Length: 99
Image (cartoon, rainbow, N blue to C red; front, side, top):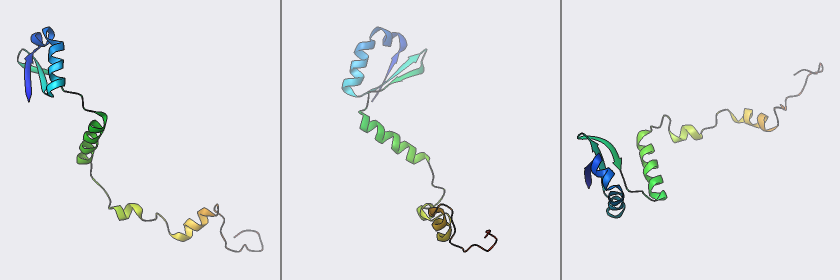
């Protein structure tokens, strides 16, 4: 439920209106000259707020690649083995000391 209140009435009965929002869980819209200028909502508990934020983020994002693409190795396994050895290759060196 949404309740609309002029700014002057909000100023006079602010504490009572805040109690009403908290206890009844209503949304309060404060207007100035008939135009909405503020919205007062009841506080959600932290887990509910986090759930709402995550749901909104999920609905506004898009996946650019499939999960399989994200999990695919970025290089071949030979390069990976070389990186694990600290960049040292198992290729034999020539007599001149250079590969």
